[in-house]
Image (cartoon, rainbow, N blue to C red):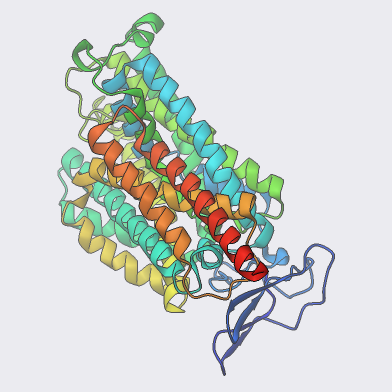
Length: 481
């Protein structure tokens, strides 16, 4: 959230103060009108302008105002926050699915192209957030309206809560099936641990990344080297897919890659608002896409191609976690146990952080309170095995989420209408969103060889530009008349 200084009027008579009024500075000075009678200053402040205790573990999360420059985090911290998000076992499972469906070489192509698309998409959205300090909900309020934003933000926050439930359920299921422990108990334990990480805030995401990233790199390298030693490079490269047949088109493969993190990528403002500079924001995004996400997918993909197990089930035992336990080495099984909780704890805490940040803005509450409430809801859902619908989640996200982000990009970088918003609802973004989503559904069911995610996003962007241009001309003509 942008630095905004220090006073937010949230109603006719209620003012939340965050410190003394900040003097104007050369960095930026603007005011965003949220609605009549309600303003949020977006004036940047220099480090030291406000006594922000950035060393306190449970510091301010700036749910309703921009993040002050004095509270921004270092480049290393931003890299840990982002790299720890996609470098997960679920990403490795997705890499395995791609290799099974497309063959290794085609899957690698989809991984690279998909991650480069994500770099451009998330990088552009994150850059805007780092410049303003605003989270996704605050940015969306300028695009969809001061009330309309709640639909977009609420949808994404709910989907991310679903991801929290999915990943928490995967944790419990893998632990239960591997070690014979009670599924519900292990799921509850996992969920509570992940809530605790999220409760700490952005510092918690940094800390879990510090542990999760090197642990994944070490164990991922071990799995790749060990599994690849059973075959040859040519055999891996020429792996044609499950039972020697590729069944997934390039378009579907790209959708799978993009949809894996399209929701969190769209609300990237929740993370990148903490970056000190635009370059820090872009470098942090680069550490996730393509680096961390591609590494995770390659670990799963190489292992699957090397072992060439017929009808492999990456979401069962045919993954890096199952591979390590299949060796029946005591210390390695213990390490795998800890690895699963730590690694999926990273992605779960990120998802819950996004969900809590979004809903806290909508309800006018605090992120930590919503993290607890939503986390408990997620645990209950996870105990019902919702993670089994993983692929369905990907398909859904590939249709309805990309249009939102593309509409934001058109507004921010092409139309450049951000700044002063006086309407509670803006119809054009919603119409464009509906058009993009409709095209996405058509592609999903009738032309899956074309990427659903790409088609939906591009159509929404074009529709929004055209509709906005037409409305601007009509408005100009009316004024002239």
